[in-house]
Image (cartoon, rainbow, N blue to C red):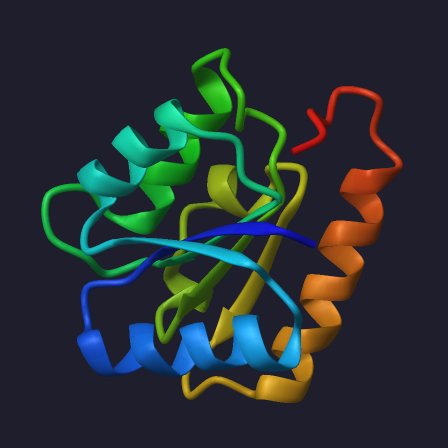
Length: 133
């Protein structure tokens, strides 16, 4: 595991996620975005092994971010995504039905987060369309 994009508007949660992803899960390169538009821009610039996004953010919410990444052919179109939100039950069915997305409710259960990361990365390593970094 090498590169992750964390899209989260709350600084405290970004810092906690950075700690978990770098120290406990071994990610070497962490890129941050503070809203969905910035996250989409970053997803167009570099390949990530995983994207972790909040749902409720300014400018472009997490669901719309995922839809934009999945529908625009590009380097992260098939990158696994973990969406962290208190609003998981209220997400549109179209988002819940997309492939390669794991949903995690707030407050964050970090053991579950770690399991989802391992499942997501394991699944993506088996995909032929994954671009190695």
